[in-house]
Structures are given as C-alpha cells and as structure tokens.
Amino acid sequence: MNRGEAYHKQMVETPVGRLIVKLGIPTTIAMLITNVYNLVDTYFVGTLGTSQQGATGILFTLQAILQAFAFMLGHGSGTQVAKNLAEKRVERANTYVSSAFYGGLTIGTILLTFGLIFLEPFMLFLGSSSTILPYAKEYGLWVLIAAPFLITSLVLNNNLRYEGKAIFAMVGIGIGAMLNVFGDYMFIRIMDLGVFGAGMSTAISQFVSFTILLIFYLRKAQTTIRFRFISRELHVYLNIFKAGLPSLLRQGLASISGGILNNVTKPFGDAAIASISVVNRYSNFVTCVGMGIGQGLQPVAAYNYAVKEYGRVRKGTWFTIGFSLAIVSVLAVLTLIFPDTIVRWFNQDPEVIEMGTLALRYAAISLFFSPAFVVASMMFQSIRKSMIASILAALRSGLAFIPTIFLLVYACGLGFHGIALSQPVADFISFLIALPFLLVFSSKLKEMEKEKAENSPQK
Image (tube, rainbow, N blue to C red; front, side, top):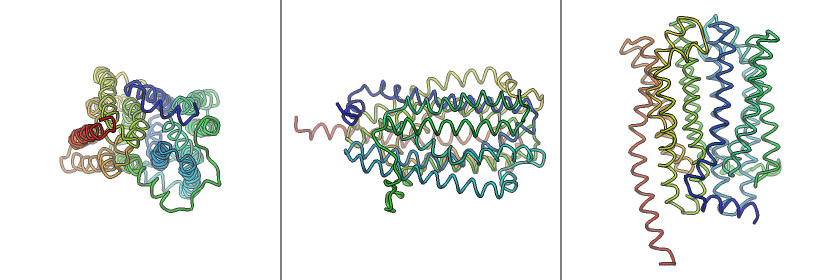
C-alpha cells in the first residue's frame, strides 16, 4: 500500500473520534510546549523587572503579526493540499505547498528588513511606554531576525498536519520550544544577558525548529517543496489567500487588538501592561488545548468533506467541541480557584499580582465559551467555507473585542476593570454568534449524508 492509499484509508475508515485525538494530541502537545516556553520567557524576564516583563507583552503583539501571515499561508495551502490529495493530484499539491513556503520566506524577509529600519517607532506603535522601550527594542531585534524562520516553520508544521503527519510537526516545534527554555536559563541566569538574551534564545530555537521541520517534510511528506513548483498562476495564490483568510483575520486582528490593548493599558502604568502580558500568555496556554484538538479536526474535515463523507465531518465537529470543552473546563476551574498563585509564578510585584489576579479571574470565565467558536471557525475554514470562517475568526480577535474594550473603558468608565473584562465579553458575544452557524450547518450536513445514502448505487 503506497502513501496515498494509506492516507485515504486512515482518513475515511478510522473511527472519527479516535482519528481526531490521534492527530490532535500531538498538535496540542506541540502548542502546549510552545506556550510553556512563552510562559518560561515571561517567568525569566519577569525576574528582571516589571518593565522588562512588559516588553514581552509588546512583542507578543509582533509575534501575532508574524503568525497571522504564517497561519494564513499554512492553513491556506494545507486546505488545498488535502483537497488535491483527495483528488489524487499530487503535483498540484506540490505547487500549493511550495508557493506558500517561498511566499512565507519572502514575507518574513520583508518584515525583517522594514522592522529593523523602523524598530523604535514600531515598538512605540505597538504600545510600548518610554520605560519599556529599551527592552522592547532588545527583544524585538531578535523576533524580527527570526521572522522568516518562524513563518516558514509554521507553513511546514501546518502542511505536515494536513497530511496526517502530526507527530512530526509536534517533534519539530517541541524540540525548538524546549531548546528555548534551556536558552533562557543559559542567557539570562548564567550569562546575564537580560532581555537581549531572552530574544536571542527565541531566535535560535525558531531556527532549530525550522531546520528539523524542513528535514521531516522533505523525507516524510507525500508532497515536496521545490523552487520549480512555485506557481506563476495568480489563482493559486488567491486560493491560498481565500482558504487562509480566517487565519489571517484571527491572528492579524489579534495583533491589532494587542496593540490597542497595550495602548489603552499604557496610562495605567507598566504594572498594568505586565499583568495583562501574564494573563494573555496564560490564557493562550489554556486555550491552545482547544485549538490543538481543533487542529486535529482540520485535516479530517478537509479530506472527508472533499470525498463527501459528510457524516464524519458532522460527528467530528461535535466530538471536537465536547472533548475540548471538557479539558478546558477543568483548567478554567483551577484558574478560578488559584488566580493569585498563578500570577505569582511569573511576577512578585504586589501591584502586578493585584491587577493580574483580577484580570485572570475574568479570563477564566471566558474559557468556557472558547471551544465552540474556535472549533467552528476551524471546521468552516477546512471545508473551504471561507466567508463564514472569516466572520467567526474575526469576532473574538477584533470585531467583538475592539468595540468592547473602548465601550467598557471609555464609555462606561470602568478603567482597568474594563480592560480585564473586554476579552471575556467579546468571547461570550462570539459564542452567541457562532452557535447558530454550527447548529444550522450540522443539520445541513445530516441532510447531505442522508441524500448521499439514498442516491448510493447500493440502494
């Protein structure tokens, strides 16, 4: 049995819940490891001071910008690769992944060049205060140097997942993340390089991840990356953009929202920025459990929808929501019980602890709503329903969040309480809007499966 036949058998015959867990657990582990190293960054930099930790919050926004392009290219090409593999068009799949890879390399190089030229105004634009700025520039220098490797790594990572090779994607990302933990300790604690060392550790780890993922891809994937496969057809890039638009909106609006959040928080002082940085990093750590399982659904939904196995798409979607909700709920309850302890792990400043505890309590409540709209957006994206996926992706990251934070902070005059409440309120609004889309489409999938069975030649 060749790779293509084995892949088809895996996607359409393995019990759908088991398949999603099989593909989702490695992705979840990789995301958890990645978020652990983000938390370790936050911890080590937090030992240097409040302003230094605030710099990690500023650069979190820059990383979201890079990830916006990376996930757009990775999910966009991955969706098209899954479709073309289902149609036995391997060379066409090669075109999509090669075009996305080299496109990401180009975008990363452009962002690196202009980011370094305009480093200081860029950090100020992202919400840096005058006291945070020197540290933001030190960290941002390395984030920008790593930009081409970060983007291309995530393109490779996502395409490995869409080909059912989630374990290799996990190993590539995981090794780099663990290396960053060691690098933080070495450069900050042993070599006393401060924020500069934390940034350098991040850049080195991302280069290592890129190298490992490229080796895995060239040796294990059904498709391959070659310069000769770069497409000169505009519609190839439009297809990648269309399929990847929800990811671009999700991450892109997250970066815009992050910049707005930093600027709105700035008048409350460096402690407020540092506390929000801690809460956002921790919340992303918990949310990534739901997103990891959701990413296990993506290749399953993309392939099965292409071969008209609609029942598997419907069952897989609801299984993923339920499984993610169960895990996230446990973590959310623990967060509600021990918010002050969690904040103290990362910062001992009494003001940061007080603000962070308040914000983390609110954030824990919002975690109960996230699995439904996150999984819904990923499912619609995978089956190439880009318009619905884009709307749902844009809600939490911008369309609901941006008006909410201005309304709560300025119109309602809630101050820092408004800042802390803005994301939970936006998440609840996103849940209320996503649920009808899910219910209606689930019913449609059931009808399509019934119609397929009635028209089957066996009937």
